[in-house]
Structure formats: structure tokens, C-alpha cells
Image: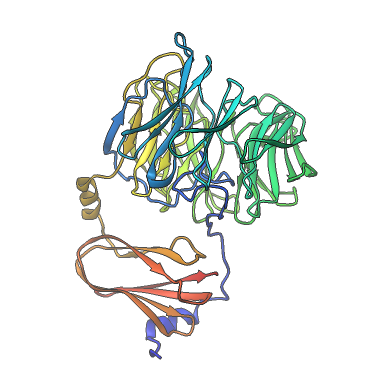
Length: 515
């Protein structure tokens, strides 16, 4: 047994009984590909949260011509391959496309679909390597990983961003007043009646409850409904005005949606799992397809308009898990170039990404405190999606141009360059030990730290009694950012402490292994 060191002893003495707090972890979804971004909002809870760290600088790794445009996507599958549908209303050959591209922008395959209408619905990547996508040509398609047709189903589908898939692999396709439940073999197994449903569905973390919005546009009455997988309504909450954004569900099964009260005041609502309201945060207006996102610490980030004088501006807001405002950032420029119609994405360290949905709109990266790190202007292109982050930290953005004009240089990959990383390292002014992610975890987790000057670094794991479990780092390190993977597959469930020491700095944090 290793004798408990003084720092760990003092740390343990002041730890209250462990609670999970508001740390948010990814919910395992057996039917989705275990890939960086298998659906447009990232998961079946609509969190918009990535497991990976995106770029902190605007360094464009490559651009690619996607002449028919990209409306929803890309999503990311195994080997970081990208999948997306087009957005061009064909005027001549009556053929549209669905694409697969590798992480370097090289074409893998293209699947042609007949008809005038583009393949502009959000794709789904299944755990068995199937790729599902929808086209307004009234077909749903299932392809294998090589782009070969497995089956198609004659079913109406619109251009909505996310079609949900339950843990068993059944896909839920909302059509007017009906949800068609489609099997992984392409058969309609059942139909669920829900009047005026919009294609904006999420699942509870257990997968046994569907949260669905009805109404679908901000100028109409709508509701949030909770129902079981057989379509039995558990509760509804009505709004005089409502939008069609995908409901956000957190690790406590609280639901976050935009709506208005009976006096037509607009809010972001936090709804408890039983349908009662937890809290509401006032906003001036809402966008039709906009959805809130949630970072790993349970902070909610969203886009909303704000009036300054006689003009509207775009604004990004961060709230804590109790609905208290942490910060807001007003975006530079006019409203037209800065409104976000779908939703923001948070990376693993809390940076925020999202872009404007009009020609010439701006795409932004903000840090976790709301400071704008960089801005990319799209030129003539429009952006009606949310970005995707690959396992190597590459951010992918897919643009289109109003569905009728051929596009160039509109699939964009942004990744930190060696120079930009070095610049960031030079700006490190203090030691920092970050909270591991994910937490709780099973069996691996990432521990990140930074050191402002070179020296001997020690990173050790202790159990709750202070016994040393493993030494992860014990060597000289240069100034910089570091990430260490801790594999606890041989350990039992419980609370563990990790401690970083370097020069005169010492810090400890707790983490939980749950098997």
C-alpha cells in the first residue's frame, strides 16, 4: 500500500459525498454507429455535443467542390468518412446524389437518385454500417458502407435535419399526422397517430420515451408531447407559439425547447421528465428550426435575436443548468448575416461552433466564455446545418446556394495547424488540470492538462482511500497542452482521484468509474 500523500489527504478531507453534479455523458445507443457524428445533432438526445476537441484557429485544411450543394450534413462514420445529401433542384438530367467522401476530401462513392428533388434530409448511420437517408422524391434509402442499395421504401420524407432511430434500430419517420416506424429491413412495422406533428423528435436517455414537437412553425400553436414507443401519450405541454427545433434532452431527462406563453412572450423552457416546468429563460424571438445545445458541464448554449436600437442582432447565450445566465455574445454585423437556423455544436472542451443561414452568412467559433476565436465568411453560400467534428479534431462545414445554383469549394475542412497550435502554446500563462471526460466513464476517459513552462510532470491515479493505483505520467514535459487516456478496464467501479504535479503546482480532481 502506498502511503497517502499530504495533498491527497487534504483534498479528500474536503470532498463532500460524491454527487454526479451536472456533468453530461454520451448515452450509448446500440443502433447508431459508434462514430464521431452519426446523426446531425450528434445523438438521439439532440445535444449538439461532440466527444472531440475542434479547431481553435481558422486554418482551412482543404476545400472541395460539391456542385449540387450540401443542405444537411455532413455526418461522420467509421474511419471518419463523411456522408451527405445534395441540395440542387435538378433542371436537366433529373438525377440527384448522395455522397461519401473520406476525411481528406477524396471521393469514395456517389449514389444517384431519380427525380427533381434533392436528397436534403439528415442521414442516419447505423451500427451495422448501413446508411439511411431520405428524399422528397418519396423514398427512404438504405445503403451499405460501399454505397450499394440494400433497400428503398416508398415513403414521403421532408428535408428535416434529424430522423430518430430507437435503441432497437427502428426508424421513426414523421409524416403529417403519423409517425411511420420503419424496421432496419425496410418494412413499416406500425404507424403512430399524432396530429400536426413536426419531424423534430428526441428520445429519453433510456430510449423508452419519445419527445415530439407539434405545430412546427413559430407562428402557429404547438406542443411538446411525451409518448411511449407504442404511441401512448404520457403528457403534453402546449404553446401558443412554438418552433420545429429538435428537443434537447439532458442526462436527467429534462427537455429544453423554445416556445411562448399565453401573453406571447418567448422563452427557452426547461421541462421536467413529468411534463411540469422547471424554469424558463426569456428571449426576444426564436428561429423556426433553432435548437439549444448542451456542453459537458451541463451549460445550455443557444442562438437568439436581440434588438439594439431599431435593429436586430444575432446573439449567442450560455446558461447554467439552473437557467441562470453565464454570458451572452452579440455577433458583429447585421442580423441578415448572423442568424442560425438549426443549432450550435459544442466540442469536448466547451468551444462553440455555428453559422448564419443566409447567403454571405458568418460562421463562428467561440470559447467556453463566449469570446469569439475566429469567424469565417461564406461568401455567396448559405448554411442550413450544424457542423461535425472528426476524431482528429477536424471541423467539417457543408454549404449550398439556394438549391438552384451549382456550387464550388463548398465542403470545407478546418483543422488546427502546427503553427496555430504553437501560437496557442506560447499563450499559456498558467497551469491547469481539467476535469476528465467523460465522467462518469467506462472504461476509458481523457485527462487534459496544460503547463506554462517545461519541467518534471507527474500525473497519478489514487483510489478513494489514497492508495496509488497507477502512474500515468512521470517525465519531463515541454510547455504545452496534453491529453492522457486512462484505461480503467482492470479496476472496479468507484471514485478515483487524479493528481497533477509540476514545478510548484499541484491539483487534484475526482472521477467516477461505473461498470
